Length: 125
Image 1 (cartoon, rainbow, N blue to C red):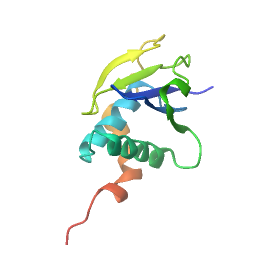
Image 2: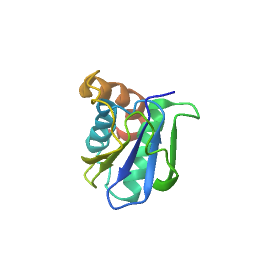
Image 3: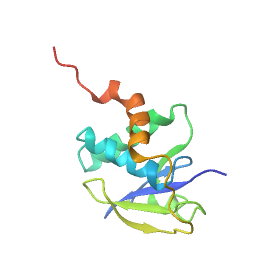
């Protein structure tokens, strides 16, 4: 049981599996945070997106990275969010339920940034 989803980069075979926080609000907040940190939208960008999500979750569970065919795409929760190289959701697959709308994307971003600013914000002196 979870709030599962997979994030897939458009035209790529890599999937990021989320066991928790797979609703649209959370996924959009992860993507918007990557944009705010000026993360590149390529292979390095996927790695940094995984880092942002992993830093938010903490611990050693709740996230996975694999070939898209080995992820739980038809997971009974939120399915697959297909994103472009600008970190925008461009398609959905295996959706069954209405989109989650709580909490707000801005509230989620604030929580995500609490776990990530120390890694992504460079102090200038």
